[in-house]
Image (cartoon, rainbow, N blue to C red; front, side):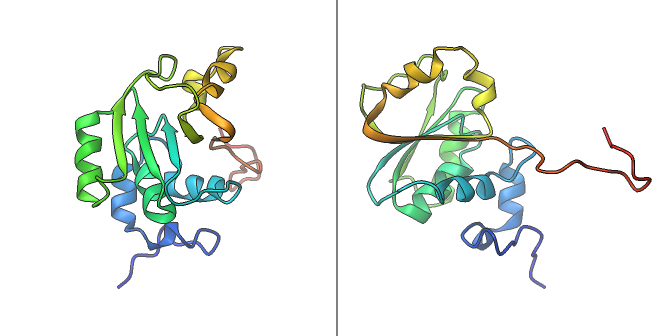
Length: 167
């Protein structure tokens, strides 16, 4: 019997991935592959581009980006083990295209104009609250580079069986 819990026609690329692998790697409440696929649909990602996956959690989004678009990804996170992310990356067979890094998003060790794109999947609220943060982050983008931020949230009010709001 095929497990179809995380198969949605809206996310054909994500639907190819093993649901157990996804649920084991989720670091928040949202499906990181769905969010990454949704965000990537608005980007111009091409083979060989350098991407900063900022606040990557357990690096599922980084693995997905490399596999699906052939981009080089710097999987950067402060809270999750870089050693565990490296193992996850190697187990996925993408060690040649995804580089795990332990770093604070406010003190990144990259050269100016290094990345073609910077993405943040459901993590920006943890480090991007300073009024000047986006300006500081943008310096790592090449001229014409892409900056993309996705956060999980509700698109409609949730009501309980009794018709009242659920909290």
